[in-house]
Image (spheres, rainbow, N blue to C red):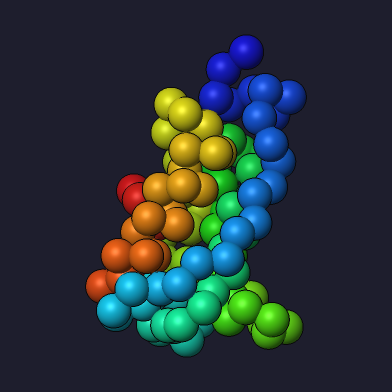
Length: 96
């Protein structure tokens, strides 16, 4: 099994994160800040969709740069990288 084998990894990871100064950049509304919820989901094409919302809100936004390619560590590694980027802030985006 490899990082692109859906059976070898989770299909979706969701976590809350406090955005650092400058927040996270979204395609729909620009930068969002504060307490955010991030959902990283495996797509059929082997990439990951990354959605973000204000924690507890109804609306989800696309993190700029999503969908993102999976790194060698798979969806879990990408999700942890996204969380770290958002904690850092500065208009965090998905890795290319």
